[in-house]
Length: 69
Image (cartoon, rainbow, N blue to C red):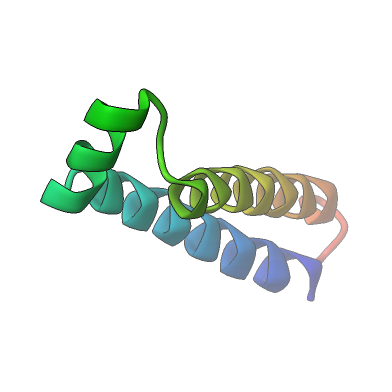
């Protein structure tokens, strides 16, 4: 059960990271970064959420490895 949840977290986290990257590369994202000097808060939270989910998912998969799931 933990390994399944871990895999779901890994996939969701990777999805958020990719989605955040793609949002940052849009015209609106680049324009905001050009004039403000920083990324949009929404994009930042996508990166943070994606990193947290990937880390939690990897931890769950690693913890359930060898315990039979």
